[in-house]
Image 1 (cartoon, rainbow, N blue to C red):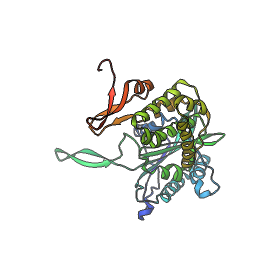
Image 2: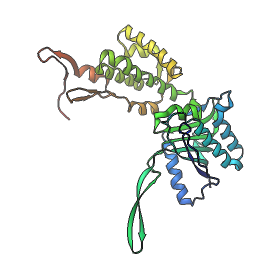
Image 3: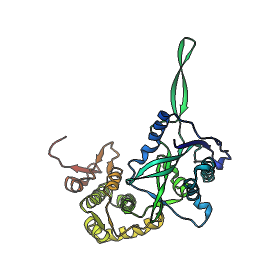
Length: 341
């Protein structure tokens, strides 16, 4: 049965101390199967993967080094699991980093892209859930409020796979409390997104999302922001591959908007340390996932909200007009429709 051990990680910023286990957990099969499903479920629908940065400074390449040792020999799994928690502890350089339970797991028989491989899993549980535990005392039953690990979701987790490609070892990561993303992805794991069509699609959509928020919305309003995002999604849906120049011609009508997009692209690349490709194939799975996160709702101060459909780029331009009422001294939207649904 795969190896599982639990430690507790503290916060170095607050002078906390870690607590370590010396032995792995002894599971029965049913308990292990339940925990395995809970830990691996978040990775089943991931669209992107990471690779280690391969830092020259060995202190920045800690997880790459430790995982290599574990894959080479399981004999020192407990010692290496403690080293992982110590490395995680060393990254807690602010008060906002939460303490928590850390599960380190050595998995066998992990399926990735139709191959079976091994994996090292590191899972940090930051938030405990309340449960009512029933118990019997004499001939009566009572309840007690206890705290434990919820099986709904993990807070942070990664899988380091014993498989690689031309870019290096494959790493998968989830973070449901991403208020401290730098701490987990860059400082602890020291990984970057794989240079593939998934990350190219993700980066480009992030560029468009932030451009709509920081440039289009302040200058042209939520109506045009919604138009831009809808046209962006439509272009990605209609084309199997993206051409940067063609995208601008299709989405922007005025040359000055194209120039602003060029300027913002350079700013985005520098700020996020990424390279936006001028030509790449579209990842339909990433598009589907990221499309759901795009906000196109127009919230008005009169307690009325107008929600634009990001899948219908023509709707906002054809059936929604914006104007100003001189008598009321107020802005207005005029919505055209045939019937209410």
